[in-house]
Image (cartoon, rainbow, N blue to C red; front, side, top):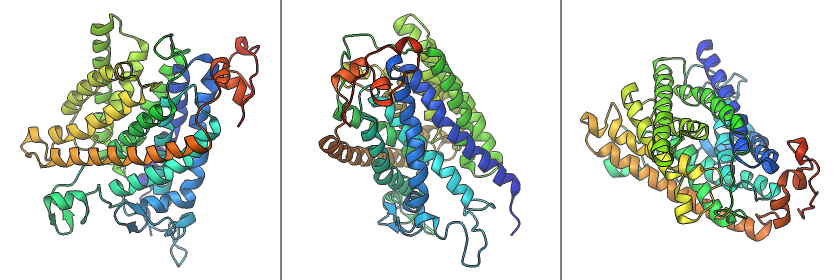
Length: 435
């Protein structure tokens, strides 16, 4: 078979861009925490790369895209260790069902999504959790929450437009497909709602940082935050553009929509911040960038550039307001994962029902698409919330989530990792931790 090398090159480039997003996230989150825990925060992202990178090859791909079990997850033993995924019985490379390139490239692309999704959650529990418990959580959560969600949305499961799905049950089918199929171009439900809900549940289980609400916990390095936001924006072109599965017009549209939605969201966040607080800050600019990127993720292929600007304005303003909810309701989402990723993911997913060029309510498509977008968002919230609750409580009862109070106050970097990010912290008292 003669492969489309242009498509193959684009997909490998996109996979590399998405992989870069997790180190970018490490800078983004690392800059937002205090100097005594920056290395631990960054290690949580790098730890996710290590754990997910290994288990995705073993059972992650199969659980995501193997033969369906009740439309909820793929059989993890169906393609365990990528058996039958790379080569057929004759030794020839297996073709991707999404384009004229080898399927191994799909594996490369999809593993990067799994990595960044679980890494996002870490921001909600910064400064206070055991590194070993986090690593155990990564392995379990990605297995029983992320892989099934990917299967349900992208693997022909319950949240797709396939026959037997929720959409098919509500609106019926034609030729084996739902008459009104849900849209999640690059991961509004799979990545952002999934991670955002998990972040909220874990923040509630783990509890507040010492001093939350009573002492300032300002970002220690705003240039790190800006650098991280820039790397995330750059990597997101692979995230959204690569989800077209080819170097084509759909990828081009996703690129433009991603840019303009993100720019509009940044401006909307800054305006909201200026009106509310009197200052337009660099942290607000970086956060607005991420909010726009999150919102356009499910919609990048369904909207047009002008409606993408509208989506960005709505997402930027709502997310800027949503990050303050933790003070109102008393949960310690350290780095605003809930306000940005959960709220941004919900806004992007639901707004497709209004703004989609094909089927959107504002473009004469009726309410069907809006209804199914709301339904899949709610199902994703419930599924991720329940699964994360069970995992979080089991780990709390077994390994325990919290470091000791002495470690939290003295700094996790030195106590857990035996090192500090900055020389002026090098003389801090070493506190031992029971692991």
